[in-house]
Length: 288
Image (cartoon, rainbow, N blue to C red):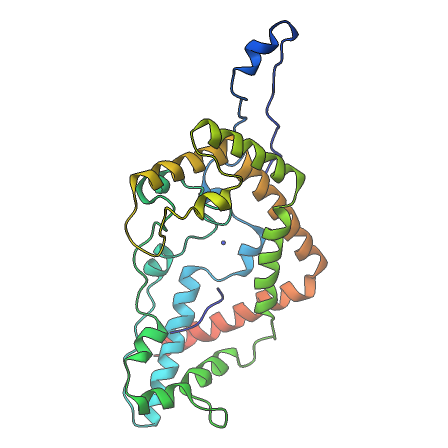
């Protein structure tokens, strides 16, 4: 029921050997792709900001403590509730982490799921669960402008005494470093190599974004065509062979390190805020 905040060496350029005595011969050969060095799988895509974000285990601790407080609050109002528990394994299974940050990058997942998310269905959420409750119960749960509901009261209790922290600012910076790193020369150069690789594989797209946005795939439906799987598999293979994943990750990580370096007080507050809330949540769960 909690509402948590929604976690490299430089890439070498491809070597093009052109023999002056055989220009026509060389032109017939595909441009060699340089494998990305230092980043071997999506599991290695750990960014500096990740250290300040909640893990699935931490979200479960906070969520279940929040549940306990809501149940107590509603009981005082004569209402018995049984909100869905937060399971860390389930939260981890539905969390793609950074595996989709630079588009599809997991080749094995692409073979099975194409551009669709390779994860189980989402568990019952606060909104879905609360939407089935009687109107009077929902009124007590959400409250009004003049009288806070039990959801807000539970959040305020967990936040009590914790240093103020701007989590929305962190979310904005997370988006900005991704957007800005996409313009890095090493990344734009890798995109051109990706495009060439995809063209040689029979898929003509100007960018990775265009490939996943192809109107032939309906990502809102569960069905995944073989064409989608083949295209997504080629997409991921080209991302690695062109050095796109490594280049984008390196540029992204460098920008995030700079933001952390330039805003030590903000990040200290984020760290201390989460630490305090986790401590309060853990003590609450132990006592309950």
